[in-house]
Image (cartoon, rainbow, N blue to C red; front, side, top):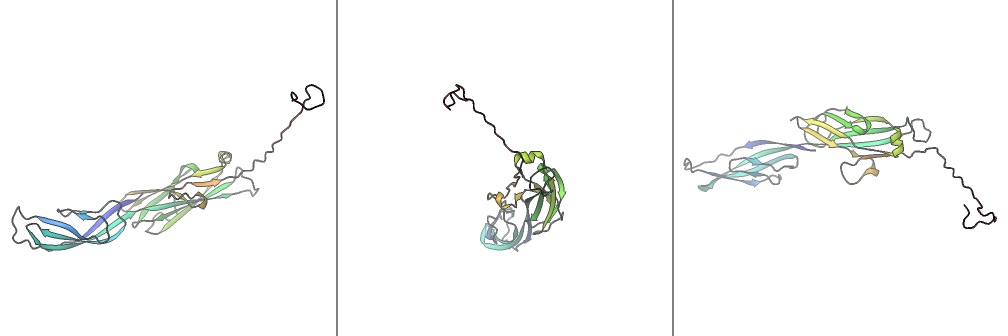
Length: 239
């Protein structure tokens, strides 16, 4: 989930309105150069409109201001627009640990989960925490609870395998990371598995840990034959 904020730095033009007629002098504003900010526009009241989900970055946008009654009386203004994007990516990896090294999946064995959060936006993220209901994790902090843009932090959690997990033959789960930016926007992201076998092409693949349990149960099948008519020949009617 991404949150966007826009900050404007404006260099206002000097426009000579001659003659200035009260109540009749009107201005027309238009974008002369969008500076790479696709879809940006300006109203005649001077309001700059930045499209939702614009790419994060710094843009220098130029617009023209003209007098309606004297269209040749124009000037330009240059605006610095900073689009701030608060976003992060949570990845989750899993490794099965045969705790007693007996080669059998049984109670006491572990799954070691590694959660990694990367700040993919251009704002600072604070109070980063991870929840994973399936394995009983709530509000666990990563190694760096504050991440600058481009930074990452991680945490490792050991999960004790249950009999239900063994019976199911696998553990499938996702986690959620939560953070706040400097504007107190709440940012969340659902984990994407870092295990290549889980890749589906999306950005929120569940993490699947297969448990190839050896139950140590042998199947013994007993059969018996009865010569129903006593003719010592196997034929229809015998059981």
